[in-house]
Amino acid sequence: MVRQKKRSRKFLGSRSHGKGNAKNRRGKGNKGGWGRAGMHKHRFTYITAREPDFFGVHGFSSLRKKKMKTVNLYQIEQMAISGKLEKRDGKDYFEFEGKVLGTGTITKPVVVKAAAFSEGAAEKISKAGGSASTFESESGKA
Image 1 (cartoon, rainbow, N blue to C red):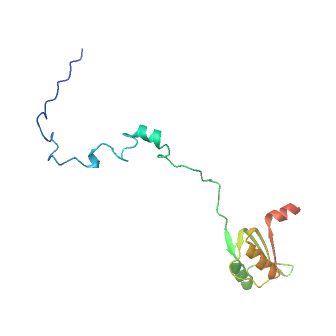
Image 2: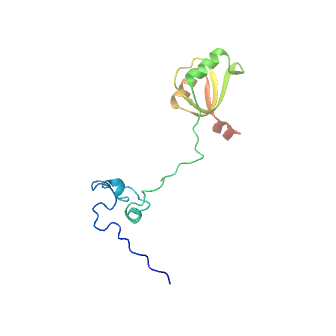
Image 3: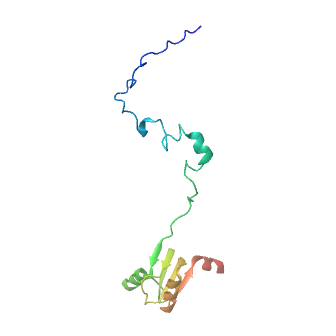
């Protein structure tokens, strides 16, 4: 049979119970997780019952989602002027796996093939005498 532990009579009659001045240990840091502190340990049933979305990350973000690369019209114009574009049938040809945006102007007739176009970019390319086509429209014809 296990002997009962002797009762501690160490702090009987003591005002501070060995905790220093009577004013010590009064703040939130000494309350054992009152308020928002200690939600995993002290207030877990309250949180799970009344605030089920308190813990964890919520929502979904696709891992497959990728940002599309972009190029502006003024960049295509600069490449056409400097002669960096491929020549086919007397016209400059530019192929890009991304979206062509309409910032800037284009004066040379350039045949542009890209994944997507903004409305302004397609209009400006056609006004300059070029053409804008997507990869999907090309594969749909074949």
